[in-house]
Image: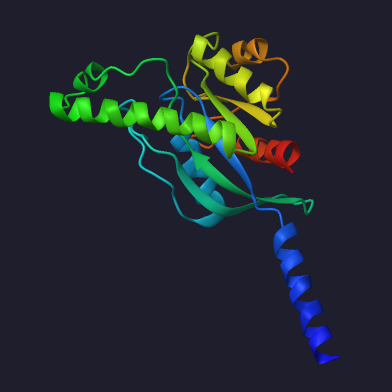
Length: 213
C-alpha cells in the first residue's frame, strides 16, 4: 500500500512538472536605436527595481540578446502577467564598421563590434523563429516606419501567429509622428510612449496585460 502511495505521488509530481508551462518570453524587436534597451530597462526597473543593460547613442550597442526572467506586471484591477523580457540587438540588413568609426571608435574595435552585431542579429532572428512567445515591436516615432526591415520583421512575426504590439517611441521629441506608425500597421495595436521620460508607460503596461495575458 505504501509503495502504491509513493508511486502515485511520484507520478503526480512528474505530470505536474511535465505539464507546467514556462513563462512567456516577450521579445523586444526593432531597428537599431529605436529605444529597445531603454524600454527593457524601464520595464525591468519599474517591476523589479533592477536593470537589463547599458544604453548608448552608438548604434548596435546591444550585440547579444539579454533576458530578464520572472517579471510580474499588474494593474489595480487585479490582473497580472509574469513574463521573461528579451532585449534583442537592432535588426538591419547591413552592418558596416564605419558606423562605429563615425562615433570615434578605433578601426579594429569597430570591425570587432560590427562582427559581433552581425552575429547578434542572426541570434535575434533565431530567437524569433524558435523561442519567442510574443513581441513588442519598437519604432522610433521620428522616422519613416515604411522600411524593408520593418516590413520583413512584422511579416515574420505575423507568419508565426505571435501576439504583437507596436510601440511608437520617442514621443518626447518635437518631430515625433506616431500616427504614421498607426497608419503603417493598422492591423496591430500601437502604443505611443517615451521610454526615456516614461510618458504613457501605464498605457503600455495595460496593453501588455491585454495582448500577452
